[in-house]
Image (tube, rainbow, N blue to C red; front, side, top):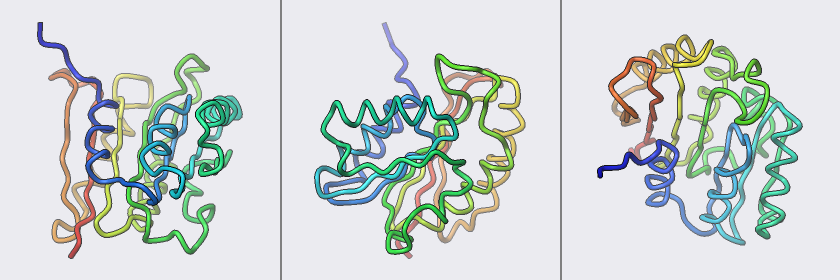
Amino acid sequence: MNQRISLTAQAHSIILKHLGSGECAIDATVGNGHDTLFLAQQVGSTGTVFGFDIQQQAIESTQTRVNDNNCSNITQLFQTSHANIAQSIPLNFHGKIKAIMFNLGYLPGSDKSIITQTESTLNALAHAINLLAKPGLLTIAAYPGHSGGKSETDAIKQWLEQLPSDQYSTQTIYSSEKETAPRLYIIKKLLR
C-alpha cells in the first residue's frame, strides 16, 4: 500500500538537507511545538531557534516540549504575531537565518476560530524572506480547506509569483488534487 507522507514530514525532510549544527532557524507559528523541536534538534547545542505564536497555550506547550528535550537553552519564544518577526529577532541574526517554517491555519486541538490571518501572514513572509541567509529555505504549509484558509492560500500563491526568479526558486507540493487540499510551498533564497 502506498502511504502518503505528510506535508510537515516533507518539509522536515527538505529542511534536513539545508539546516545544520550551529545555524539559526525560525518557527513562525509554533503551534504545539513539533516544528520548533525539530529545528532545535537540527541546529544542536550551538544553534538558535526563534519561535512565534499569538496564543499563550501554544507558547506554553512549545516551552514544555523544548524543556523536556533539553533544547530550552537554544530556543527563544515570542508570544506575538509572526508579523512582528523582524522587530523581535535581534539585528545580528538578520540575513543569517538558514530555515524558516510557517504552518498556517489554527492550533490543533484548540479554538478553530483563531486562525492565521492573510494580512499578518503576508507581512510576516515579507519580513521572513529578508531575514533568510543566502542560501536559505522557507517552507509554508497552507490549508485552503478551513474558513479563511482559501483567501490566505490564494494570497500566498500570488505573493510567491511576484518573487524575483533570479533570487528565489519556488516549488509547490500538493497533498492531493482537491482544490481544498493542503499544500506546501518551498522557497529557496539563492546564493546569487
